[in-house]
Image (cartoon, rainbow, N blue to C red):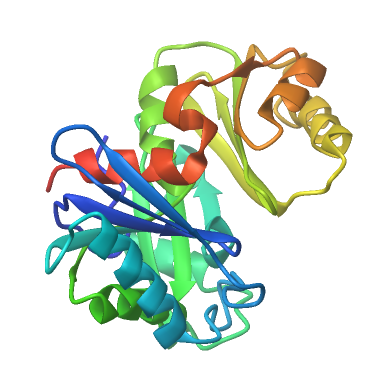
Length: 272
């Protein structure tokens, strides 16, 4: 299984994760050190098609302040982008084509020209492909906040997408249907694995009613010819409540904060 290389990759010792609500910065080298900044409402509005950041200079200053607090200057910085900024599509092994065909598939139903698309693919152990796409103008804004802090770019990935290779590794030899659910303040991501193969990755706005996510979990087995999930593992906001409804397990440690967990993975990711 190759790494999920979101557009480019370079080993970094510091990282920044962004959501519509906060910015998290972390630095590696010894114990992981993390700092957070709440973001003004409306500063970041994640979308795969339209510019996300209303003021790049303002967000750049916030990022620079957070990195300066951690003593980071001029180093490569990994970026974990908001999940809702990235459009994804899972292609089963049986339908996988050449890269040009996958690119054409990812460019369908766009609200912007295909020439403006940035796209990359991860291939799982069973031969399935996860495509991830974002508009160039969108990712460029996130690049600029790192540049504003006087740093260069390291790995670039999505908060949830960064977890897919690890989940795939964990479930590669496990039979049955398994769900991995990450809950954040305004949205959630749900990965569906069947007999070790990634079958679906859903990123949706999160209702305040956890029961609605539970109802989706109940519907998924029938879509894949299974009676019930073999496991449901939940992390993030309201994880305990969803796990209780779904007879699931809550991940402890950094998994309780998806943004920090994503940065931990990116900071330990080696160059291919």
